[in-house]
Image 1 (cartoon, rainbow, N blue to C red):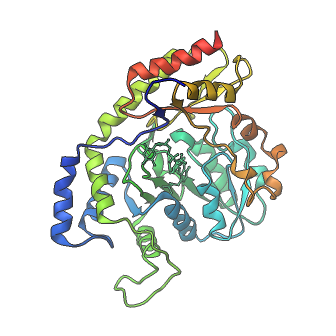
Image 2 (image 1 turned 90 degrees about the horizontal axis):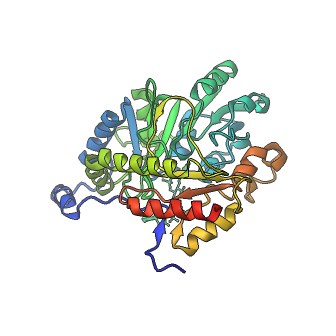
Length: 373
Ligand code: T4K
């Protein structure tokens, strides 16, 4: 075992603790701790401006935001989704009594393959739930055309896609709704948190109601089967503080991403991944694919890195479609999902976070290069 400090796949970027104190004092003085208080409202406004979107509803986490987004969309029957994601994606459908129908991914982007969606549409299909996996944009144009042709809703799991922009603006404007995660491991974090990006004020009001038990606006009655998905004032305050430092954090991620790409460019059998089209990414993850041309198998390289205290992650293994509550569906069969099953055996997400030293990136690249020599 190496005597280097362990390096994990990510590490939250924490601003100076002293800078958080005035936010805490403000909350203490006001004694308004949650239920859409003023700090919460400030964060909603600040995020709309930062992300370039019109309406946003904050949540206690991304999973509850996904569940509520699906509920708000009023879906029934079947929803087409990807097996190559964190389990919360499909869970949000099961929680709404919907049947996930898995469609294979594009091996170049690891996102839902639009060319395979139409074959999976039946008379029960009501929506598509793609994921901007690792923050890399889906083929939003093709997905929109398919949805329009078949009268389907589109809910993007944009948990990884905070701040990602395509040629026309925020990636989050695509689809009927987009859902973000602000978990500690994400580019922008509120410790735990999430949000739904909504197209209009009426949808936002409905979602705000659903995350607040379904209470009517004046609180006198309950109009919907709501849950409690609210974000507290402390979490919102941490978000406001984080936003002050976000551009610098993203720039540091960009430099690390470039350094990895440059260092790994000529390593036979190591492939770096990106989304489709011109876009500005957020470098949330740094996935590599260990292909057959590389002399070590993926797990052997993973263990080699771990022996040097470099702890990547094999996101998203196991595939959702292989999990006990999903594997019996016909669409979950490996023969229906050859690319997802192949890619999940090849992927390693390498460490990336703003305070990761360039010297450590070079060390990781060196390990991968030397193991190939
Ligand atoms: N949709 C998608 C596509 C998602 O990826 C996720 C979540 C969701 C929906 C649901 O959103 P949330 O409900 O979570 O808001 C993590 C996260 O728990 C999860 O948020 C995330 N995706 C998923 C991809 O990864 P783990 O099992 O990797 O977490 P953990 O604890 O192993 O952390 C990874 C590394 O990060 C650790 O080795 C050390 C470091 N770390 C972690 C935490 C929590 C820290 O340094 N500090 C920390 O506080 O799941």
